[in-house]
Length: 546
Image 1 (cartoon, rainbow, N blue to C red):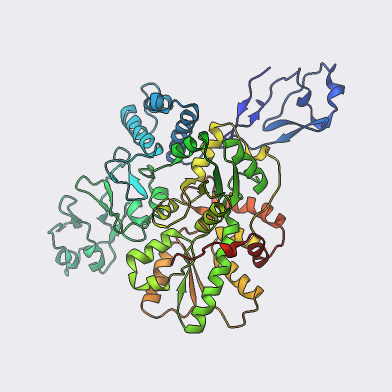
Image 2 (image 1 turned 135 degrees about the vertical axis):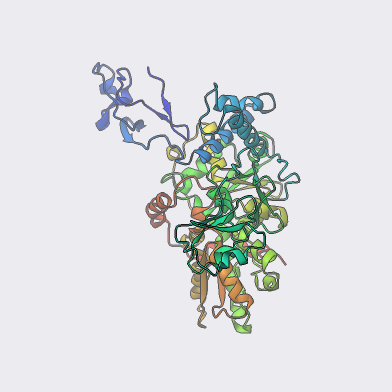
């Protein structure tokens, strides 16, 4: 009998094109198992087929190829998380964690960098973060994201360079604009001395021909609040007093040199302990693991050791109702409002637009609402939020009675793989949240749910909303509100351009997730937000952070 080939989430997949003569479940067409007992004809299993017994009959169904990230940096992060999870479950982490870099990169041939020694050092730093510890670049753990010193390439590019558009003009405005004496004019045009250039950009702004190009480092370009700078060694450095924890830099760095600290080991230890541990998964989870339904995901989480799990879409329903009531009052008094569920957007206001703090909705996030609900039902339990968001790790440090731990979808995928759990193989089917609560995962979903509550309650005054998709759009809207020039009643702010579906710790592309969700969400029942909140008794839950 052939050994199975394991897919990403641990379900056995028979190797393509091989004989399996002694397996009754290796036949297509649903032959009865009893008819196959004496059948000696071998069957060739087609590529991508999985055998499955349904009742007394056996079928073969097509499955996806074992998943692998196209992004090699993301794949390396996953491999580290996987091995850390495997060792944590086995109780061997302390003894064997030092061997992880050698397991992933054996031998002496480098795969991506200059040498295997640097590659292993990068993996060693990743192991430190995966174990929940901190690097020298973020020693007290105050930041959500951390620069991996060994991984940062320093991007040895000259940001400002003179192009062929230079006309060798007589005005020499670029020379006059540079306060560092970095520009000279030669026979072929202006020249910028990289050793003297401080990358201030004044020359590019002064050139009447736009002949000076600006090639920004990816991490600098991605940051919406200018929290990333270069140190004296040209390596990335994060100003945590400015950082909003959105994770854009973790996605945009081509070398994966900025990453988040994980709680995967702590969560696994809690799952192996005696306390009750409940998972709470974000609305964005539907579509991340193929077309696995909520019921399948709940069953898969129990296989990992969770006592039970809850849809955060349920908390989103309660948030939508509470925020709708708050918005009614704001409209009647002429006060402008912002949503509060995105922690990176919330932090952007607190750090960069402090004048607007009174305009933030006092309603807690769906994560916190769900955590308080779970602890109301199970007072001594621990709660673990699971989502695509890195900034949630920051939120639980500052909000009272929120989740105890945060895991990302990347970390959950590693745990599924470590325990050979495939959500698609689990039983179906339950639903906690309304379709509107599930919609919180995409841009416009929060305001859409709030508007639905207002409609359910017959609120007749006109309501306008400015929907901001991405941190840069959020920043523009906040600048307008800060200047008193925003006509809309409320800003819905989401730091990720595709909403939570495209968060920095998602496990699949936005296009695939949207396609999967188009198959899943129409199956949700048509319960209203008001009915759902009333049924679950959220009137007993503190929904604000005042």
